[in-house]
View 1 (cartoon, rainbow, N blue to C red):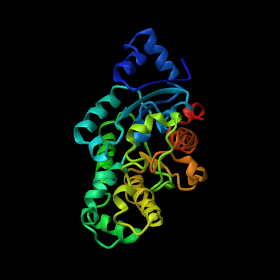
View 2 (view 1 turned 90 degrees about the horizontal axis):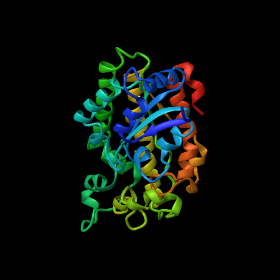
View 3 (view 1 turned 180 degrees about the horizontal axis):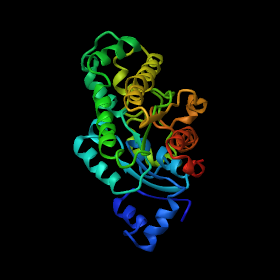
View 4 (view 1 turned 180 degrees about the vertical axis):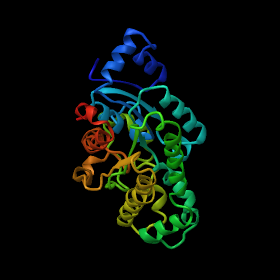
Length: 302
């Protein structure tokens, strides 16, 4: 089989797998004895088309099979809605996946949702500007990451109840953000990053500084707010609690100490790395994927 067989369409996945008891299915089953089958499910870090995002950079470094699904810009609340979770569990139970990789949660607190949370500061209003910590505290008092935590819990609880009893080695892997560096900076619009151009509005993008420029004292506070929200907050209030509640099932890649991400050139815009940045980030992410696999399949992951 090829280095990595992967697709974004379930019809193509069924063709890759082959029908039961056919030569193709027997070849796949033999191949998967020592190679992983991975399911990537997420927002733009996994699913942006025309762009080598984290999922694609990850699977390009793995010898195995992969299915990539999701929706750029989706919130965790939408992506992991009950009906979608039920459907995905059926998909998982119908295929020999070893690991489910999840990427969602940042969008729940960004763009128009962030503007709504701070509506009292948005034009034509003009409240006095505040610090990053004060803004973060207000957001947490209004519910913070509770919907994101509930969405992830819905997925993991369903996996634990409906998948693990028959497949005890099945695992789920998530990831943090990396500390953001280009808050309020114009996106680096290049041919290499053309897959993300459709997301850009007024060069900067709609995600963080566009709504928060009316709330925070300066761009420095914007960077501090980004760290509190998308790094510390998401990790400490979502991923870390889940790793305890679902110990042995769920783990995550922590990108805090990943030094290349601290350079502005790593980032395409406020929240998306460049293709080269995602290529670098695939290494620590794949370390987490490897650790989640049965030892016999570790050698298939770079």
